[in-house]
Amino acid sequence: MNDVISLWTYLSASPLLWLTATLLAYIAADAAARRIGYAPWANPVLVSVCLIAPVLWLTGTDYGTYFEGAQFIHFLLGPATVALALPLIDNLDAIRRSVVPILVALFVGSFVAVISAIWIAQALDLPREIILSISPKGTTAPVALGVSEAVGGIPTLTAVLVIFTGITGAVIVTPLMNLLRIRDWRARGFAVGVAAHGIGTARAFQVNKVAGAYAGIGMALNALLTSLIVPFVVRLMM
Image (cartoon, rainbow, N blue to C red):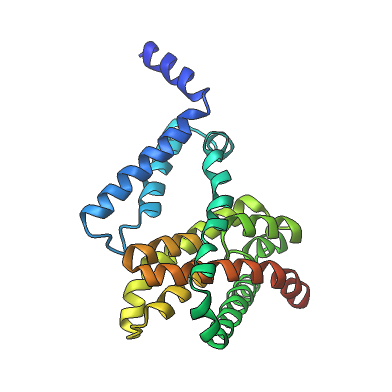
């Protein structure tokens, strides 16, 4: 037992422990999802969270320690977000032909996401700091964290809400779109990109390449618009 404790003390002191654990959890989750045909409920990010969270709880590891080890993955979110803007260039001609519906869907989706989040939080009588943390949860993590800090929110809480929003959107998008009988892959992809940012975009690419491309477009445009409208909406509603 002493040898086990000594080994754990040694490993836990290395930041590579939680980076390795996170990567292994995701690889295992993605392999399991692939084996069952990427079912909506088997989202790799959701499964990874379910694998990592009990380990953190059992070992008594706080979030700060975990993040210190896994922050390289967080750093990669920035370049990944920029890379997902490439579909804007690849589909520039298609975007020009559909610019009006794209802009209408973008503005409606972005404003509804911000306003509804603030309104529901106010209806629940949540503290101001938490409301400010919730307001940018509809956009991708690197942008949401910066916006949250700028308006006076708690970036770590915003990160949790962003992940929860993305996982929820990725899980329900396929059955919801099927239920609503929306067959156009462009509309399906753009909707999930606006509503569920990077995690939803990853799900869209799993289902259909066209949907994934338009999800990337929606995510990139929503990140830009949300960063502009959140301070304005916050001042207006609070």
